[in-house]
Image (cartoon, rainbow, N blue to C red):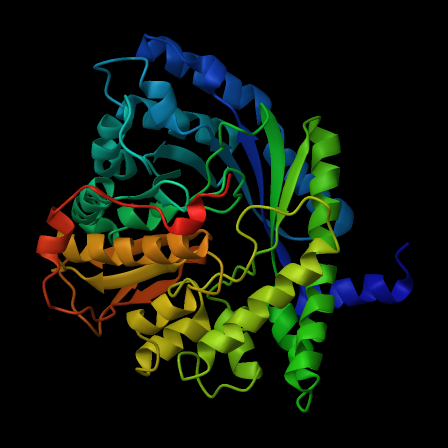
Length: 452
């Protein structure tokens, strides 16, 4: 039972430390919308989404008013569209993207994810057509997000897909160059993609999920930083316990919101994603947590160790607050969305190489990284391959969301606005990796994939 202290503490965290529910995401299966005729399938898709999610935004707003808890985004994730569009041979997959956009407009949600394909072991019917349509689909829509899973610890890495995604990301940036290259900011390339992730741009509703469910993504970097700040002389064991207790409180709020939304909407409660999701707002930064732990600047030596401890403590605290933890659950380090990360890049401390090392111990991977516009397609693919290898070998989810800044070079900045923030253009190695990428084929799964 909550006491007066708990209530006052939660109010303080919301008002002063940027505590919020980052998203409630409704996952909707579209498997019963499959049709050999694309127009028929699109009609079914629109009807099902708008029926299931017609009260999603109202529900979120009602919970906000009733409990005083900010819910920043109301989102939808759907079955990977490549699985749906494959039945309508010869149809333009962009037709499905426009249908999703129409449904998003009707429901009033911030984003809808699932313009996706799962190709970790190869391309099945519909996959190549959807992937090749991504630049156009993200250009002609506003709220659609796309993701492609190119590898897994069980299947290895599909290097043909990795090579293709380098081209697709570059094309997506080029066709949206007049809009701050926003296309690839809505595109994620995964290894070991989870089926229940509520966070964009990588969310999709996996084939193993129920027909409809509610997933919640919490956030609270500012709360964690503030908690650590109160104990300047604590050793690392004590700090880990402080972070665990704080993560418990944050997750408990997410559990409350998820259970309430499930009850109001009449759909099952899926999971709470524990990930600490930063924003460009002052005081809402994962980098600032690491600096409060004792680093002069995020990116200096010791950053990976500090992040590993933070990530582990967040998970240990979170699982005590909810029996249904899933998604990505860790600490996000998106450069453009984290004020401390942006500062670290601008002062020369944080590089892509250091970020890659950090992704071995945290949630997801190279996220919202802006690179020079003249980067080669093969270099983009190689960055994806490196990140996928970390995920494959360590049996964890990794991802790349990288934005080539067309017409810009190192030192300049892309301005996205809102939660996406601003991205300083980061340097990349100019030595060629083209021969390696163009070999194609598959990188075999590691030995630990044979578990049966």
